[in-house]
Amino acid sequence: MAKPKPRKSESGSRRESVSERASEWVRLYVKHFELHFLDMSRSLPSDASDLDCGIAAIRAMFETFLDSGIDGEMIAETVGRVLLEQRPRSIEWNSSLNQRRFELIDKEIQESLGPAERIELAGLTGIMREHLESEANVPMEGAKALHRKLLELAAEDEPS
Image 1 (cartoon, helix red, strand yellow):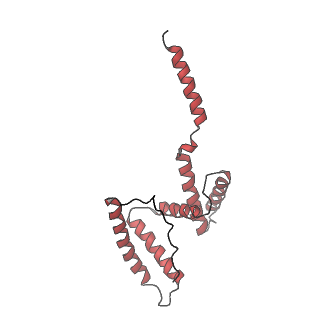
Image 2 (cartoon, rainbow, N blue to C red; image 1 turned 135 degrees about the vertical axis):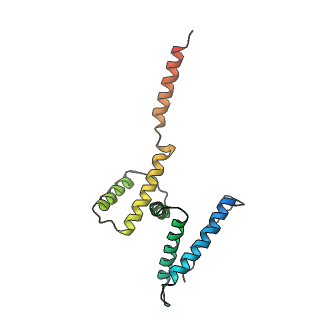
Image 3 (spheres, rainbow, N blue to C red; image 1 turned 90 degrees about the vertical axis):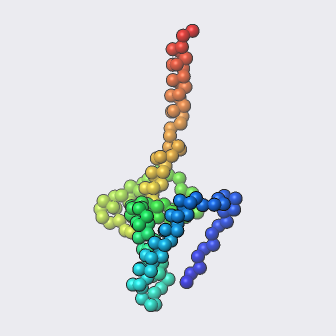
């Protein structure tokens, strides 16, 4: 079995305790995951490869997330986003990502979108939504100019 990558140390940024709600959610997730994984592994052959076991684990993970109330589209979007975030540079929404998203949407409409592309599209959609909802997307210069104009108008309307 391949060894998992060691986690990067997050000393200083890691919280000392986990909230009760988060702790309970994780305990339930692990319990459900274990049950789903046992169900999935029953269909594995005795000489199953690491890849076969990994696929069974991913299926169990998917079923467990569905049990927790997270829908399939959100799971795909989150997985796509996590995969995109694993790239060495940070992801900032730009015109090339937008163009790639349009290409993938065209393929989806033409029903020629592959599974990996579907995950990529979901990840790009998640990054785009976050960008659209972020403060970085607010036209601050225009808002500041409007604010100055309103202050000027208010000052003109004040009695002398």
